[in-house]
Length: 634
Ligand code: 0RA
Image (cartoon, rainbow, N blue to C red):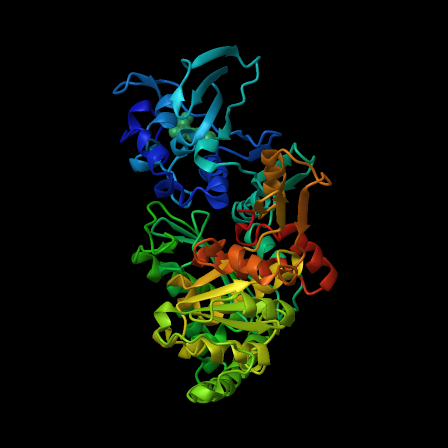
């Protein structure tokens, strides 16, 4: 199967100026997400080596100056001459867009990376990048600046009898592209952990030289460890169902384990890319699951007349689906939806076969799952009823919740609603807003935990009912976007841990029960400032601690200087209406972030997977991840 590589296998397309001109086309955006994408892209190249069995260890270091090193013990990027270009293969890989074995289909390689753009994009967007290759008993080195080589590929001489091979890439993102930036340890650690789960036995480490933090991830259990991790704070109904199979060169690895909660959590990956929009593998899995439980239930006479719906058999389900295939077609808004149509049948038949086998061999586990699904089926009828009540109430315009301060505009396209945490902040917002088109809905901080209840119970929460009624578009299966009463739904909460918590909760709710609202980009996050710095007549606001330090530097002042007034906002309530209007509500001057599906999926992931049941660890966790939730460190 393996063909040996030579430089001519690398097909060459374009040069890198295009990347610097329109970076977002290649890495999504140039904010925090795009920045971290550079590291992920670099790591993915090393993971590709691991996928084909040549690399066992990947080490990532964040340096003091926010440059990053990724080292692997793979085969090393080839250094031989690329005839067409008269350049070394390393240089071609580093400087030509889309160059790399994975595009010619000759070398077996599973393209990873969300955009699969290749390491040349990282090079193009770096102030400088240095590559060191160990191969053929020698060490090779080359340096680039803004994508252009500044020296020939140098042979640094023998690697000292060490016949190990590998690649080490160090790069410094270009602030011309990214502005001032900061790598987040937790963001990178989360991805490395995920990669460790998905690639059994692969060791991935992260070292932060700025703080001394260090973590190593390695799981011999692979997907089994992943399931265990997700369910670690949950009560599970049975031992995990794990299987692995291959058909038509599509490798399928699946873990399934039900817990006693009411939500479904299916995490699907294709070539290590999290497919948040699902796709053919997910449809195949779901179809097989529904069918297997119905068939088994009937055969074992646990199910008589009733049949189970897909939603019934997915209540309390945790599943990890990981596929490896040669030419994945990624589609959809975030390019994370698998489009290869043949994959549906492949996954469906593999899941059916292995699930049947498990159920057949473990009747008491099968029993527990089917009982839960039957209960879900009954509860769904109740939920339908609850939704209808909410909907009926909504049809009377004067039943709009009393807490809602609506606006006078009638055209939904021009209207916005601010969902504000707490009554006091709600009061300030009401004074600050433009009544004409901005509505305010204050909600209490502690709304129902959307994870631990079924929709019927969630809808019994006043906060949620109020929210659903105010938006006017229904909820769950009945949601209809065109009925929405506002064009923008803006979440406004304090820039602290509790604010991050409520934001995560609300986003999780929207993601689960009004996904269309999110995928069509109607949800926003308000970004209130953390500091106001006033010097003479000049007023400046800072949205992060870093920015605060920068503003002090720019104004050439220090905390406590005479003539300088500094306000540290601990909550929205501390701003007066004018300040709130200017910084957070005036469409012309406010800070606001549009939420996309990936943001909401991340919130859902943080919420359900990483936050435990226990309050203390959860607080600690949110503290550590408060910034990471939606990359709020603007
Ligand atoms: C092209 C071909 C081969 C390996 C690589 C690229 C490669 C790239 C990166 C990037 C980071 N680490 C890497 N390791 C390998 C195949 C080489 C062969 O056949 O020997």
